[in-house]
Amino acid sequence: MPTPNAPSGPNPSKAASEVHVRSLTCPGCGGPVSLRSFGQAVNAACENCHSILDAQDPNLKILQQVKATEKFWPLIPLGKRGKLRGTVYEAIGYQYRRIQVDGVTYGWSEYVLFNPYQGFRYLSEYDGHWNYVSPLRSLPKALAGVSSQYLGQTYRHFQTSDAKTSYVIGEFPWQVRVGETVEVTDYVAPPRVLSSETTGDKETTWSLGEYMNGSDLWKAFSLPGEPPPAIGVYENQPAPLGDLPKSIWKWCAAFLVGAVLLVILNAATSHEKTVFNRSFSFDTSATGEPSFVTDVFEVTGRSAPVKVETDANVNNNWIYLNYALINEDTGQAYDFGREVSYYYGRDSDGSWTEGSTHNSVTLPSIPPGHYFLRIEPESDRGHGTIAYTVTVSQGAVVVSWFLIAIALLVVPAVMLTWRSMSFEHLRWQESDHPKTSLNLSQISSGDDD
Image 1: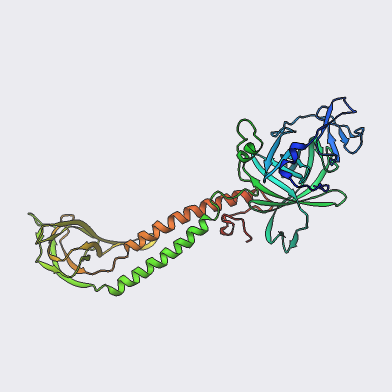
Image 2 (image 1 turned 90 degrees about the vertical axis):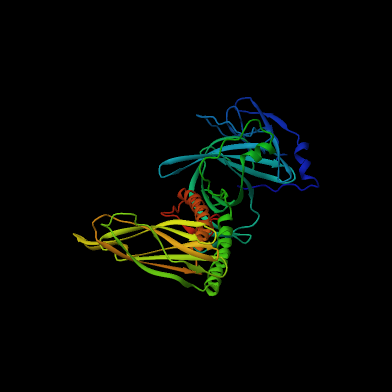
């Protein structure tokens, strides 16, 4: 939007309080017209009959007579003052604009703000999403493809559309007209949006918007009640998680490297030793108590993992072994059970197998001492004799904690990443470049692909 040169002064933060409102009469309806911009406004729109007036003409010459078929009520009333970026601005103008995309009409509000020392600034609002907008004093640099660069920041093209002015009231620093259409192009780098407006005579102006929360504006302008809630994801709305997913992945990678080093160190310093190995058989047709105890074996050294392995000659059959590793010196028992089952066959899809003839379990941190196993086998009756071998070894390398560490580190990172990807996916679905799938390159910042 073209902006006249603003006068300079020593105390812009107090400037708005020194504004003297000039009250005139609309030549169209006789209603009052208030001019607040020190004569810097180009046009003014009557709030009663909506006529567009020449604000530079002492008699407020009518430039356009408009028969308003609908009325909009600004959320920030004209004449209301608020402090933004340390400067007091007064709302002096309001317009409502619309675009059509794929047959759907979207509308948003724009507010003209004025400070006699800082000149004009703008606010835009769409579905509860606000932007503080400033005119650019230098042109952005066009990049290859659909990007632009301004002050070293790259902005990605978001959308190009024709915006039509539907309603105006108040003062404007440009030739505003109801029904006027301009081509609007937005480039985004959240939380900022770089916008260009091109008129029918090919005059292009640039502005830079920065996303604001409605609650901050309500405080700045001391407005009653609550701002309208933000609906959906806006084009330059900052991702709620920010750069958190990227930081999480960096820490995750660091901890995973540390965990891998610990596994390697553990494997290098561990010496697995077999302390017990015996073969047994179980007659599935026998009656009586099947449980028994083994010979005593010794676990030496410091507390370490103990691995119990079971191999059985099951053939389309199964055996379940109730184990108890018992410390002969203290009586402490470690109870656990393991099943060994193996099945195979052939069907219309070909050969198949299920299960294995081998099973193992690792008991963590077993203290040294004299131990024996109590074993109670189970299986279906009438399946003959099942032979099995039990092997006990100490100092086994345990990697289960490493898998748990991976889950604890990776799962939260994946969940946060998915949330960020979903947010960016929703953002770009509203653009001229909708994403057909979630794109990792869009996580949290909307950076270039």
